[in-house]
Image 1 (cartoon, rainbow, N blue to C red):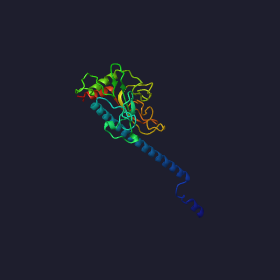
Image 2 (cartoon, one colour):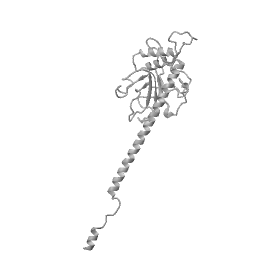
Image 3 (tube, rainbow, N blue to C red):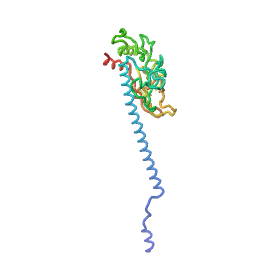
Length: 254
């Protein structure tokens, strides 16, 4: 009886059972996945904030260029950082390309941050010339006078551009897959900006191109600024409306 009683009072062996160890490992795995996912999301948001700041800085540089030159820059067609093609020629009607950093007085960034650029150009606009990338006398000032081909002539071109019907034939903004409708450069043209800038982030569409649809270098179309990031799209867009640039220049032009 004494021996039997001793066996009943024996302690259970210490340590985890295989089932308990399995549960612990699963929990640790889930915690690791959650931490990694949080880190990835934080990194993506940080990169997007950086791209947003970059796009806004580029918008300011384009405004300053317009004030100095009485026009907006031509797109960079060759990737050299200068306006126009490899020979420096601003081909009529070219509304999309790389942003011409060097023409803006900026350094060309690494490929990962190299922005695309679009500018409204319509030399055949009803009511006058609305090619915003060409300095044209629109206000009747004589050559050699202070007002000749200056920022106020660009303002006149912006007004002419604003009087044109929206069309997929020129630099344009499309929707945001939300209140502004679908992201569709052909069927949903929302407005014509004076210019837009697109800063790429990841190749979320996995097509080998850092720009996500509908963006592409040479395509003069961009989604509405502020379009939400999705699994297949994270580009950051900054754009200047025709009216906004007119007002900005009007407050500063001589």
